[in-house]
Image (cartoon, rainbow, N blue to C red):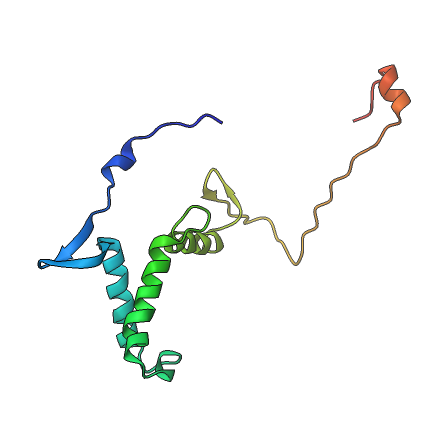
Length: 140
């Protein structure tokens, strides 16, 4: 398969933050990582009284380790070449979208009534080798 070169990704460079207010960070962070950390931290604060977050009183675990771990998971790991949130979005879209389509449009079967399970059977004929070698016209 021939690979087609595309240069559109060179304009989508993620901005990296190396320091905040003249304080050097131990690791460089991207805006996406900061957004994930803040989002998970906000969710932790909102759902702090709901299990399993209510089962621990450890502040470092609840407000630092869990947001940092989920941030790392969402920014580093990939499934099928996609980030986890993009992969999850495509799986949900697969289950939500209609399965009977033609050219991307839903087919409405108004006159067709389908009840229960539909069984599809494929049948084929096997001919002996002599008929194939003789060049006999085979039935269709």
